[in-house]
Length: 358
Image 1 (cartoon, rainbow, N blue to C red):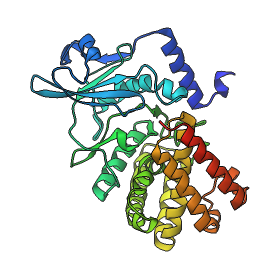
Image 2: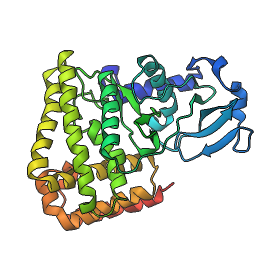
Image 3: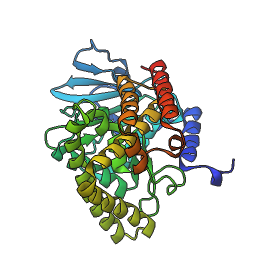
């Protein structure tokens, strides 16, 4: 296939897979600033002197908290094989290093800056950040995350994975530190890094936060009625963030299509927040749970939350099928199925998720 015929994803995947196959090194930072030599960092275990904690839940890497000479460090080490079993998973660690190298000189608020990264050593070393992974986003957390996400977009970075494991809240702001699924694009002419950058408008910042984090967290918030106020707060802030983002991109000469995209979403959300908040919640919840279920199934990286998403979709279809269809929430391939057939399909996906549960 000619290069011009490849999607942005395929171009990136091919380049990074070839780089990995070559055995070449990608590194930046100052090895002399490390708390220990590279070989010693690679050999650390949970029982090594100074290791205060080992966080082993990541799909791409494990993270150790190392206390050395009175200072705490995050030592991130790549797994021999990423647990996300597709090209994006295979290239995620290299991709993360590439993004860190590009982000480091920008000094963006809420973006962790490593002091050293090496693809050959499988290391990312950065100062330890005290914080907790967020649950349901409160207003402060939502503002902080939208601010960081918009800053990334403005500088040409589209982050796909805003899952809680990639976020830390230090009490003042949310921090992003994992960029394994953050890809380059042109924010003045493109909407994201999928397809040709313009033909997949369904993927955008608020949608990514809702799909990868917010609606998953809302499953723990209780009923849909209890979750609704949290969602409405986030959506109001997202509409405001998009209006401001469009203004800043307009000053830089963004295309009409890009500006219409952000402004159109903001206008629609403002209208629906006023006139049909319940329908807006259902439509966005359906899209978020469907999208994340698809992501987990493609990567064969399903969890108990994946199963809960599949179960929510089935229950929502039983209780609100007509509303979901009227709102246009269903994907085209789902909308052509009647409710009985769609329920059977969703049950099959739940069973598939069980087979791929980590």
